Image 1 (cartoon, rainbow, N blue to C red):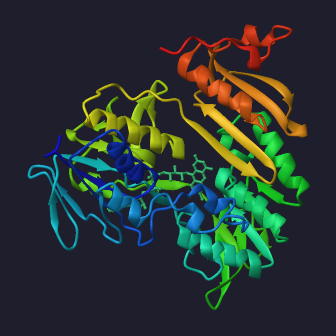
Image 2 (cartoon, helix red, strand yellow; image 1 turned 180 degrees about the vertical axis):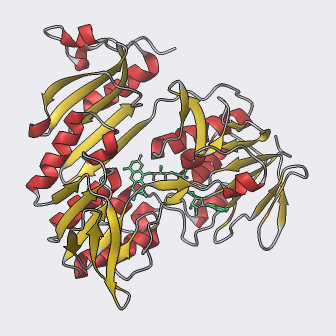
Image 3 (cartoon, protein in one colour; image 1 turned 90 degrees about the horizontal axis):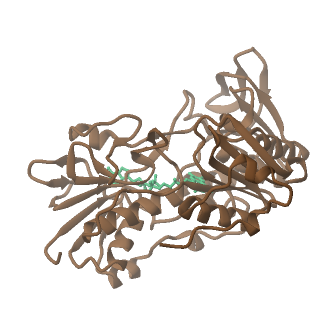
Length: 407
Ligand code: FAD
């Protein structure tokens, strides 16, 4: 292991997670990590939450610092994009050097999908800390904010912006917020809360064009011809995985870089892929999950394999999102949900939604029930999971649900 050389591309949650996990697990070879961004590595979730509302500092969001790299003997080059991979010679190249690897970890993440007009002054996106600084500035200087896209991220920003006193309108092409990715209880609860904060919604509305005068945003024209005047706009219509490097190296790409159940490229066992960019087997097909927990679990799994503990990657995705005082938590995947049993009251912001596929619990969504969320994460890991009839029994309580002993 001492002579093994691991190269990691991407200094986001997954790349940094892999470097730290390798050392935590006792990997004694060399670790070289390349990151494209110039900033010290940071966590992204606060960018749409505590950093945006001013309760988190930039320093508090750092995921690792130069002194950690020195202490752990990690060689980290920021502001250094990897521009190519030579799989035959097992090297990666930057503009300045060529570096050999025994094992390569691709953790290149994703970038925002952009709409035409994204360069107009007043049109913003949110992926990086640089984006978040601009958005935070806009929240203190602009009067209105139109958000295109009612996903988790757009709605989190809507909530903060409304609290900061902006008039906020969310425009969404689908008929419901959150893109049908959650149960109707969750959609109902979050939409109800956001409307109560004065946020308005244009649902089922496509965008025709952004309007400008002398390069400065004045509004947005919807597909039905309606014009919404605004001096700022957040485009939040999802991400595209960063696959170009892999594609050029001949790796199979299909909504992410395609990996096997060990998170190895299906074309090259010396290349592992983790985080937002990985398309891995799961849920009866392929999954690409955009969450911190997924990035860190996959980083840990690959680090374990590289120190000789080979096992298939099995982890249940979980995610959280914050709207004012309300914390939404989700565990499991949303494959063809055909039955939902709700305990509690979504409109009172206190509920748990058990989501089933063919009688099997596949997803658990809860608002402001952190203990139940934690219990359910353990149930997904260890079993057993409650069935619809268990949950419908009078006296059923998740708190009292008996989990299998740990193996
Ligand atoms: P990324 O974070 O995208 O990092 C990849 C890095 O690789 C980037 O820095 C990129 O510049 C770099 N890179 C790309 N190509 C190269 C190259 N050729 N050479 C070198 N470097 C390269 N998840 C949650 O679970 N909960 C939340 O509440 C939550 N909130 C979020 C809020 C915001 C505003 C955003 C943007 C995301 C949020 N997420 C949340 C999602 C979560 O942050 C991502 O799933 C996670 O960051 C993915 O980590 P990653 O390392 O795979 O990718």
